[in-house]
Image (cartoon, rainbow over all chains, first blue to last red; front, side, top):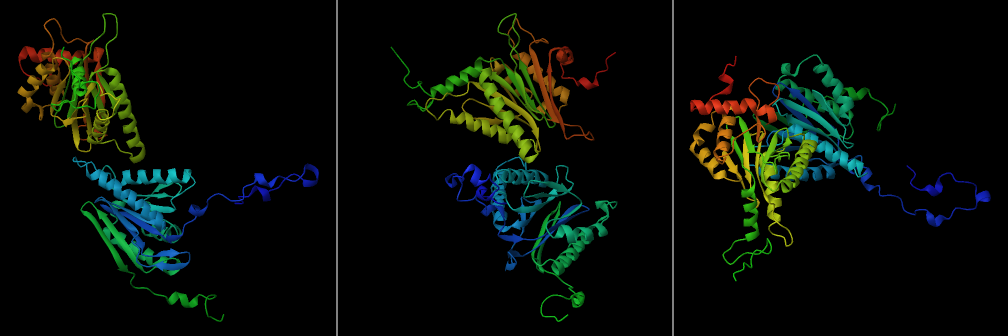
Length: 260
Length: 262
């Protein structure tokens, strides 16, 4: 957007006289918070019978530079919820501090009233919406996984505008384009989540991460994966994509040092 | 002539370590008409004796709903209670808005406790002249809390505050072991019996002066998790008062739902 009204269309100088430029701003509004700096790419999640799986790769990019390759983008809240962060990494760290302080406050309660994943998601969506309304958004798209008030698996997304969305499987960023079609093929709408096993869900996410690594230039083959069940959270943060096959790449022309 | 120099404000200790203004505020609670609260494993009940300023006036409200999962019963200055109940309503609504969760009882009771305590530590402020019984349900089940003007809060199994409340407390202490496993109707019955103990010779419980509030966990298999707050006043108290009469006649606390009316 052009923030300088002086360059906008104005009445003719020869008829109406020149505009007094002292009324014009010489500086624009602050815009440094309206674009992200160090970013994480997709987060993907699937509900299965008795829980939810969430996965991200471990990359934080600085523009197109693969800057940090050991970033933990899955954050545990309490003992039964996980938040997966896409988007700005410093905003992720800020939100993580918010969640930390809430968790400390909640643990003072002697009665075991703990916020579940659904409460957490409602809260995060409100935080995002407040910040976007102040024109100072937190540049993230998150997936919240865990259980709702009735103990049923919960998976929902919230983005930098405060928009919320829920589905049996979800993906943010590039994953919304590349992973969701795969997940829809594996787990069609008519298939209830009770028929999806934990192994199926984990394998599906690994397959999606692999496709994302093939085609998303801001992704990495090192990833984190969290399985949330009523028994607890199984978080692995230093996994390596296995069984890659780059054979298809041979047929792709138009990049690098090839002579077409 | 003797004059107490240590009760001009709420921030000065007496040499004996007392804060007189706080103690006077607690006297205001004792002037208020009595309210009784009790809990069992599934429900929390509040009963109160309403007073009217004069024969032709309406009765002062004793039980205020804060939210569908929580209510308070008041003894003392009703206008101070309104300040506190408005605050509690706001906090409760705020919790539903930001987290989508009914506020845990202990949390909100601690908040009003902190507010009341602040009033005893700042020059120019005065303590609240009201005591509250806060009853409600949260994730951990039904609760009853007592709140005092000093800012002191306690979780209670049963409690009574207000004028002549000692009589009610005596009843509650005698029957304490019966509460935990009794039914919803029996719990109301115990509450009314405790309330009746406090009445002076020439008074009795009527549809006009009795107020009953019930809140609890919904029975197994019903739609919601909680049975929302229900206030019984006026004609709605008739069956409760009849049950009270019957139980006194038979000398036992009956289960109203077992009665088969013609």
